Amino acid sequence: MDIWVTNYDDDPYKLEDIDEQTINAFERNLKLKLPLSYKRILQNQNGGIIKYNSVQAGGFQEEDVYLEINHIYGIGHPGLLDSPYLIKEWDLLQNILVFNGEGNAWFALDNSSEPPHVIYIEADSKEVIKVAPSFEEFLKKLTYKELSQEYEKDSWSKEEAETIFSGQEEFLIEEVLLSYQDTEDIEWYLANLLQLTEHSSLLVREAVASVIGVNIEYFLYESPEPSLKILKRIINNLSRDKSKDIRREMKEVKVQYDL
Image (cartoon, rainbow, N blue to C red; front, side, top):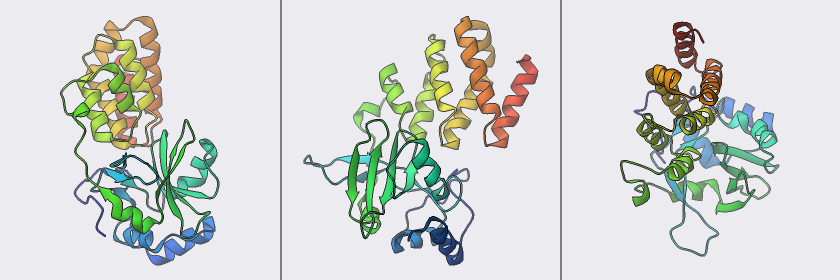
């Protein structure tokens, strides 16, 4: 099954190609077996953004319930090797393998069953939803759904924006983020920027860095004192980012504005 987006040069989830030997070593290290269907897609591409944006979930009485998903992990970092850390950090279920997530929700293989079920875990409520009885069935249920009418517009309320910022749609997050960069409620906006500096998506963090770089003078000279403290925390967080380009951009901001 061809699931990968191949024309996105800055895909943060696309890792170096791997072979069967690397997959076998990964399985030995984590003492588990990847489903054959998972191994096949990794041999085509080692993780990345997928052509789909949702999967139809099982376990619901209602019809047409879909969960958002836009990437699948490969073997490496960020990827399947992060699963033990994520389980500990977010107090997730044991005996699972996390293969997608953004901090507020996770898709994982539940290795307590054979074959492993695909489950969806809400981080806050700890609700577990059975999505598919196997990874192969999960792949068959991937689909592309047009954004709901709620999001097909040029402006969003703050409540809608906050919901989007806490989700997994990185392109939508970027769009909403940029639409609010001229807001008069600077403190609210910077608080959300600060939250997004911890986002797992490189695209989102790059968008935050871009907003800071373009609007730094506006934020510096128009912000109340509490907002300036948030601004400095944002710049400090980005200065430690995994991306050297983001770190370099923030260094330039610090030097130019003596921060």
